[in-house]
Length: 442
Picture 1 (cartoon, rainbow, N blue to C red):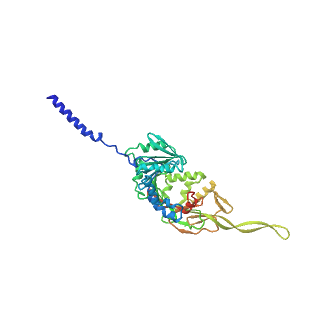
Picture 2: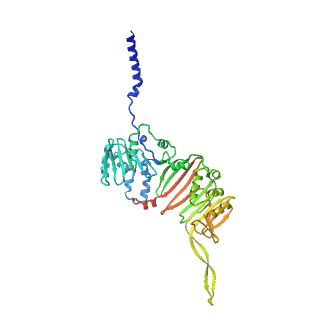
Picture 3: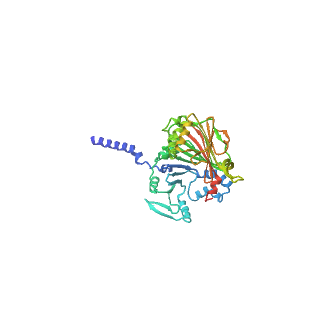
């Protein structure tokens, strides 16, 4: 009787254990998603290639770019289908400060990819090798690696391929990194077709928790939209009024700021304050004295030339061959340079410090800022004006914080669009025609 009872007990226990462990014993291993395989980077991003092509097509046709049909949405889609790539889903991008970068692309039919690789061999030397039963292709000219499986393709250029390869091929379901998880759940720019996200250490060192970039384009310009979220509340905000110099022809550099910096003066640990101090040390600039005296309005304009009258002394001979000195005037062209800033009662202390540091020097009745042309100085109310012409340039009431900066013949425009407690929205406008003219590809 006891043996019979023991047998029934062990059978029941075994059945219970089997039923309990059955889901674990026969559970199928879940295949990782493409997002689970993504490597980290200083900059990571998502691009809907077909949508980006559609958005930029007007720009290419407006400028009559050769071979523009090759960049059309229809052509790119057909090439993707021909070579087994699913370009309707997003392409994921990752890059580092050192120039290493890569991308992961969805694959719809891996059997077609080899045809595309063979086509590439006509333009570049491509070798292949076996690593852990995986075939890896190396593109000699580009010094890049290419690997594909049944549902994704890895493209990578740079050092450290083995680490990237291991991350991609050995990932498990749910291996999404914190950076990618933050990016893919980010609400800002979620509907944009090309977005770059960064938690770069150098940004964090300056108090930036997150930075995102997206784009808009039309036939004449490319707009890079920026969003920055700070670790701590910002110690500055946008003013509602302020004076600017009027923009004019031949302006190569311009900057207009209208900020309330009352909190920033008392926050020496603020990342912006520390960045200004670090930048100022290059020329021994008295940053603290500047912030103590500055009321947050600044307008700077440089470019072109201004004609001024310059007095000089000339020695002449009279009828009796006596040498006399005659004061004369002549018109001279000087580089256009204008600076205006609002100040408070600490202005004289700032000026004295600038003279003591040699940043501001006096030549006769004119002044120089380091390597600036000779300048006149005038004060009106709370504003100081420094200008290279004979008269103060015309000003206007303007509320926008913006600027223009030229580099190698290309003029970039930028602006701070809005500020809140922890967030900054801004834009950079890049002229398309100049980029196209400078591009060897086009």
